[in-house]
Length: 454
Ligand code: GAP
Image (cartoon, rainbow, N blue to C red; front, side, top):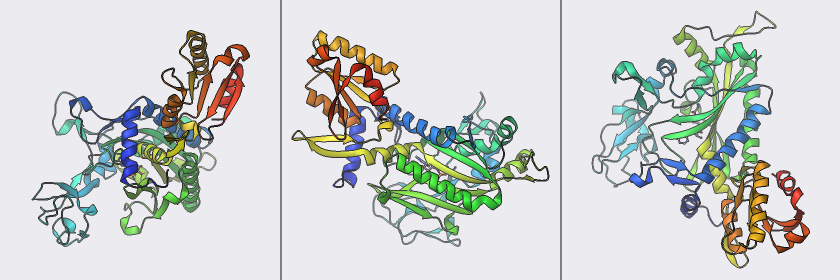
């Protein structure tokens, strides 16, 4: 991130770049939008897929102790009764009587928890951040689960919830996974997918949305391993943060105190990041004990214990360590970290310094002239590179300098220039995004040259 760009200015520049270059658009824009909904455009979807694929590789495919699932988004509503979400997945909300802003009480400056006060909060010291008045209604709990109905009749019996986290499917499918994969403890189940929360105050671009994506792991362990496994996963999360290019000085690992933790968690570390709008949560790591499996045992009446095939006397409800990652927040942080401005050829250059593996376009093929003698073979080279599984952009319009700038702005690591010498020497010039160094490479070696550097 450019050191001179830390505050709201950086956010404004990033949101504008996202729209201008097709990373992220406001949702339903031609109908006036839908508040705080966002659509990933052609470059955004590539970036997001690269992040999800690398996460899956690192946390599932490259480990012998992990398996994945992709569960249905709508689950039996009893799931959410068992976990306590129906009763307690809520935020305290209050309405300002003067301007009718609906606000989260726990975010109101001057509001203090007070079991004796109406709604559990004393808000006499708070004022509305929107209009400045001190005239509030009574705080009340607002359940954040989004509801819909299944089937033709819309009554209480047909209510289902859009899952507020992907995590529960790992517990609900635990028995099936155990029976079909014959795993031994410790082992984990991972999932990437959408989650929905009717947030009271969404905002800050894609930071807090009502529809978002999570990458979650439930790692099943014996209770006595909990401290060691917690450290292991904290370390694994740090390695991932390095992989996506986050500067360590902008990260904070915050041990959440007992009174602020979810009641079932015996230890929680929030991974927080210095966003341009302040230090806020990026990821979470929680020791969820045996809470979820025990609750699902009680409510489903099924045996969800693990029986050790090597020692039948060991029959236990495993404990769980849960590393939880937001996809959209990962992408936001990756973009904030990547955004740089510098001077190249006496011009301001915006350059997204994504790690090469993450870049949505890996190579741009740029013929020096639009003339057929260059453009026809350059298009053929672009197609060859696509067939070598590289994400390729082909661009023949405007000056070569402008084309380089366009590619820098979307973070393309390599630009291949097909020039008049190529016709005779069969080689192209490859320019590196970060060093801006140029090397001459024979056409048959281009795909390997690039792939080996990603
Ligand atoms: N299963 C545990 C769980 O869901 P969480 O802290 O509520 O824990 C996990 O959510 C992660 O999901 C967060 O650290 C964040 O990255 C992401 N997340 C949560 N709410 C979000 C929202 N409204 N918009 C975008 N991302 C969100």
